Image: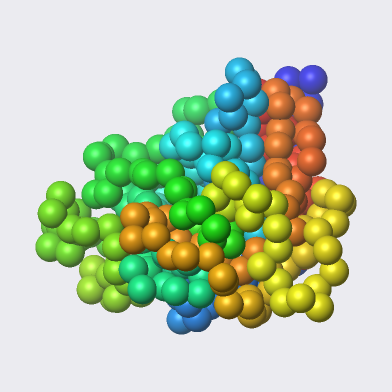
Length: 299
């Protein structure tokens, strides 16, 4: 089975060349439907697929993020891993990347007075070609801003957490320190302004997930009242473009933003077996991404 997985992975660039367009279209549409464009980015036209993997409490289990998946605070408490999948081997093999994770909905989606919150920022990421996972991103330097987990305040609808991947310019390590360092507050960060200031080009990839507080609101939808009740299906509908005003009190201690929420669903893989995955867009996105992750797990 290992030899079969290696054979299929060797054909991965060819497979992705055929499937890349619809998959990237799904991600692009998900960003638009969740209003990440324009809330976080002025535009988004990815050329690669970014995956986020959270380690679960159970040994050898991981939670893989598909765009719009909803997780709990406990499921996202550990620092995630990142990977990059592209039909262009040159992009993946030869480039260095900057990764940023922001929350545009703090303290609540209805009151974004401290948004964006910067949850992670790091450079010098590259694909580890010698790893058993040839899409895994690793970095060679300390993060500019270490990862902090989602902690939306009680009573808030789920928050959006947006990962954006940029190719790294040669002078990034020098220029970035002028804008983000140990004394920089995480709140009221503006990713687009930062990207322009340090000469980052348009993002090459992105992904996002939602996290609600660990109370009753974490499993409810922030869609307008006319929206159907949460489904028990493993497929999550796209986040609503609007959300009703919240009656919950806003807490000043919130440090992780949120966004309009789709029906809850969690993408899970355990060892070499695929479990339920929440998604936005047609099932093809989840099917192919699940296959890729399954094959990587078999190596």
